[in-house]
Image 1 (tube, rainbow, N blue to C red):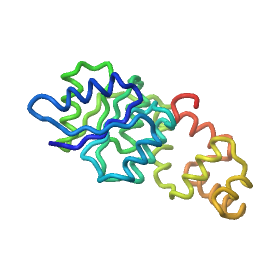
Image 2 (tube, rainbow, N blue to C red; image 1 turned 180 degrees about the vertical axis):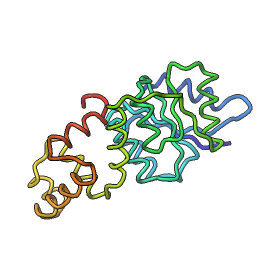
Image 3 (cartoon, rainbow, N blue to C red; image 1 turned 135 degrees about the vertical axis):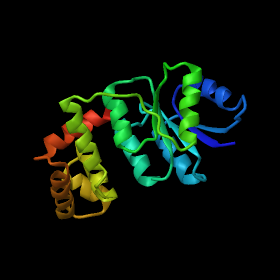
Image 4 (tube, rainbow, N blue to C red; image 1 turned 90 degrees about the vertical axis):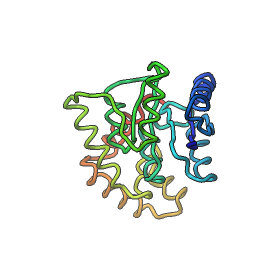
Length: 210
């Protein structure tokens, strides 16, 4: 029996997934959360589960950036993204950021169960994809995003929501000079030329308006 955390804000989908995974030959233990903050809190407060089933569009979610945060803080946790959107960028981005699998919510129940069991068995489960040049550039940026330190990532996220250096410095208890130093390193690592490009990049990785 595996311990699975289902992170999704749709009660009907959680109910269906719980019934599917707690019945049949493999009766797994299911826990549930309905937002990204609740998911992060659950992971902090409990023993790491065997699998996280993650929706990228929950309340408080930052799209692929939420996945990036989970992979950074829990690098050994297998994650399968189960999404209502099967856009190529979301699938490829999930793989680039370290998810173990992707399955569309529109998939048949047997296909979804198969995807989850594959990831629980230590396998990868992704549809075949072709990338556009634009997607390739974004995937490269995602790879570089993972080289940011936690402090650099926090500064980048705050800049992306419009916070000024002074506000960021005050909230984080650091100097404005340190914020500027973090930004210089962030721009260099991501191959960007200023705040506007950083905001644009992270907006695309959020996948939807906040």
